[in-house]
Length: 273
Image (tube, rainbow, N blue to C red; front, side):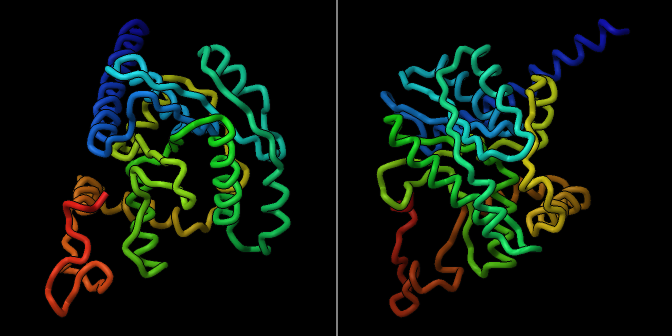
């Protein structure tokens, strides 16, 4: 019986790995994420998503018909109890080029965030700025983040319901300075597949004491809402993801992308990146 369980576990890992490879490969191809000669900084937080991202990038580095470099980077934000040895040990075992950046953004976030308010916005800005600067210092022209399909859909609904705009996390974009391309290779990956993969790979997960400790985040509520939809109407997430790739400016109300006087698109579909 135990041997059967081992074989079943191995088969599950093979299947979910293939699904993730297909999803990442589709995102890389559709959005032209990787080109010959790229040096890509892979952001590694210690969570399931970033571990999966690194494994996917290493896989495509081996099988792609082009040559590109990878360097894994972790930002040690000096959260209390952060196990500093976990990521270096893991990356040394993988024989992956990496750099650990130490910056006490945790203290800044805790001091600047009013009691009862969420820490995500400030934490994200501080982390993003530090990582962008690190990418340039390391000579990287691209930076890869571990956001997956669920993150993209949740962000879209958060902006729709709470910020009053149709916007989400793009799979590929330039930073404000225009000197760094940001990639989300897991854009088409389901979080449930990543969870299964991470379990089978036995990644040394490091919990976040900032995000994970906030129970009333709007994102958590939206996540639950999507999960409920999936229970009542299976595959709704796939439909929503397709909708984000199938936009008709003339059937919205934004004067910046559609001229309602001349009835012409100001940004033709085939010119959108």
